[in-house]
Length: 286
Figure 1 (cartoon, helix red, strand yellow):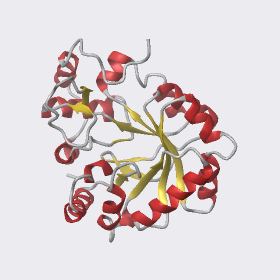
Figure 2 (cartoon, rainbow, N blue to C red):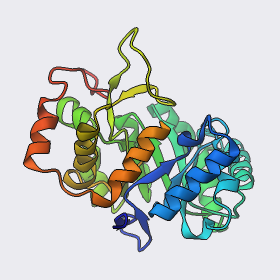
Figure 3 (tube, helix red, strand yellow):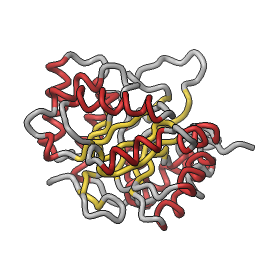
Figure 4 (tube, rainbow, N blue to C red):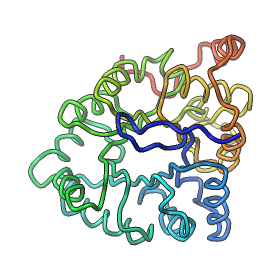
């Protein structure tokens, strides 16, 4: 069995429904990181996503994808909101990834209206984004956000090709996060890329942090995490999902990927019962 591929929004490009997030490579040796990249690609993962803020992930992913970069849908990001700063980060990321273009370049982590204003204002990052697209250094433009208001404003201002946001069963059904954004993005033909599908909650105070590279507590139970991943991809209909940055949880998603399909009624019932009454990771503001 192979990993399903889906169209990148209303574009003809196709990418695997499971992506490799560069955070997974943090803490791995160069040889381990290269093996992770190769194993993911050979398993059918074609969507790779990385950012300068992910420690040394760019430096590790670059050598790791040599030999098959042309078979990837390679996405990168910048948190710099200025044109000059975004240009510097774009050029450095291209060098580190050992490539001459990104398939997708994203405003990273829009978290406020001020972020949006700065990116779109005079001398803002969007000037670099548009020039880079015109010059062929990037093919598509998108953004990531953990704030729904900022995401909605960004979509209002520009016809982005993708949105990368938390789409999590508990946050969506119990906190409402994503309910306004998803239909608008879909109507615009955006690819809907999911973060945090396998997230559970914020780490409880004093809890043992058993997961690497995650600032939140992922779902530890494999059956529940599979149900949550199925919900995001098949019930909500996300284009693709990037699993947690924990290497073990990425390997879990990789193992599950070929058999993923719509959640069964039993799986939906398990999700409804799981952590009932728990505060979701992304509740909407009161």
